[in-house]
Each structure stands twice: as C-alpha cells, then as structure tokens.
Length: 180
Image 1 (cartoon, one colour):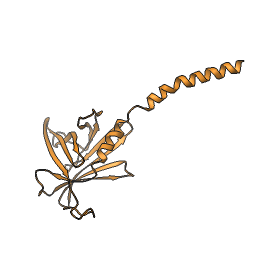
Image 2 (cartoon, one colour; image 1 turned 90 degrees about the vertical axis):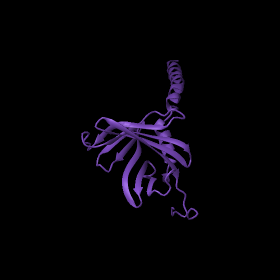
Image 3 (cartoon, rainbow, N blue to C red; image 1 turned 30 degrees about the vertical axis):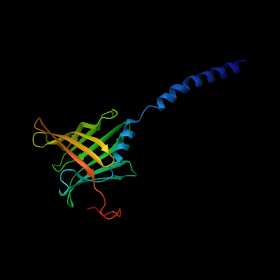
Image 4 (cartoon, rainbow, N blue to C red; image 1 turned 120 degrees about the vertical axis):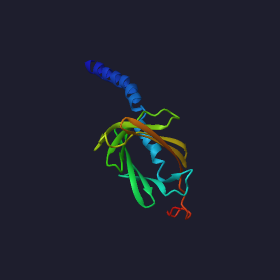
C-alpha cells in the first residue's frame, strides 16, 4: 500500500509539473526570431536614390550560419564591418568602425511591426572625447528586397542620425554570382 501511495504522489507531481514545463519551453526565443529576420539580408544592397554610388553593403553568413557579417564597401575597398550574433537570450551587434573603436550593441525585445532596434551596450578602444561612435542602429524590413537602415552616432555628447533606403542588388548575369 505504501508503494502505491508513493507512485500516486510521484505521478501527481509529474502531471502537475508538466504544464509548467511546457509553458516555460514555449516562451518565444526573441534572439532567434530577430536573428532569423537578419539572416534574410544575405546578399548585396545599394542605396535606392544613388544607384551609381560605389557604396555597397554586403551581408553574409559565417561560423556555420550563427554569425551575420555586414560589410560596407566603396568599390573594392572595405570601409567598416558589423557582426551580429546571439548570446543566449540576447542578440548582439559589434561594429568595427574605421576610427578604430568597436561599439557593442544589444537588440531590444522586438515588437511586432516595429523596427529591429539595437542600442549601445558598451565599447572597446573608444576615446569619447575624440571619436564619434555608433549608439543606435535599426532595421525596417519593407519587403524581401527593400530595407531602411537607420543609425545614430554620438560625438562629444551630440547625436547625429542618418538613414539609408536600400534595395537588394540583383545579379546581372542571370544568377551566376556577378553583380552589376
């Protein structure tokens, strides 16, 4: 009889704990969802209003698809780079600036329909008295081939905002990899 009571108690505990565990497991993984959105950027992008500009922004995956690299290119010359990756429940961006500093930003919890927003977490090799640095970054996804990339730089306590309307660059060779 004692064995039956113990088994019944264990069974009740197991059944009672089941929904709590399932609810916890069903919690949305915001970093994964936001990173999946960013992965859709893989490709080469140009400014909508300046198609002849040599500026191109290339997004590519590395490290087994766990890191997204954003490279700014002026013609064949690299300009800057931002690397996006997960860190547990967080999505991080590290910007490698031509000035030599490396601001690290963290994504805000996404709100459906709102831009994906990053804000400054900290920075390495930054002289705030002399250098501007990235403090905010946002992406508005307007479709599979159109985005807005907005950023805010800070220098000496003054913020400067800028925004780029970008379209995906289409291969000029029927999809064989060469770009116009």
